[in-house]
Length: 261
Image 1: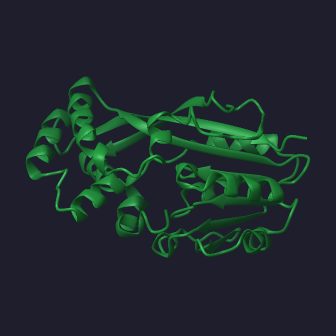
Image 2 (image 1 turned 90 degrees about the vertical axis):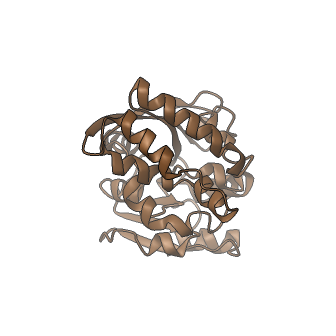
Image 3 (image 1 turned 90 degrees about the horizontal axis):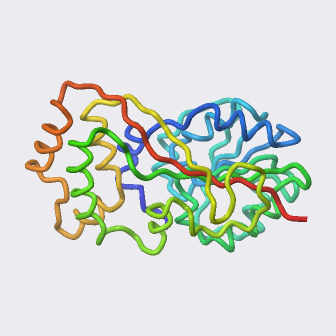
């Protein structure tokens, strides 16, 4: 899925919700060491910044150069471009070598991966024992009954423009996502841990989040505008006006594990 988010990289930077800091504290508590972490599909580095609060070094990688150009610098984070042409051996060497990584994270991205290949690389990289891999995502944003009715109707119009079967894992809250690692008490294959991400946002913020969806860009390239001005006005009315700032909740889900021995 290289380049899927290139065209809306600037929207992605400020539209998406932040991951709660306690998630990273809990994951860090599970690893035996705190030397090296790998944040795969880092995008603009949102998760990597939080990981860096707990690990001496973070390698943050992405196939999208445009996303990486918007990443926030941090003294403990090395951002690396990993084109899809890179071999598994090259990737393992770039990250740190076999049996070197204490924590691997993938935020809102693993569903786009070649999963068997990624899991094989992750298994090689993870420290054994003591290394942890955690993947998570989010789907629904809960605002209010009035707004949610309009946004769910809007979401239904986007369905033909998502990349299947990958996006189905997000729609299914990772319940069918393969995850061949031993559970560490924070979700497991078939039973992801259900979480919530609170966010305070303006109406403009929620619209920018919608516009950052890959389906919106794909539809526009096909000549279909899924967010016409009439729908934006309807959403604005349901929101309570363009000047209103609301507290919303994103529904999230996580699976974490370690290499089976």
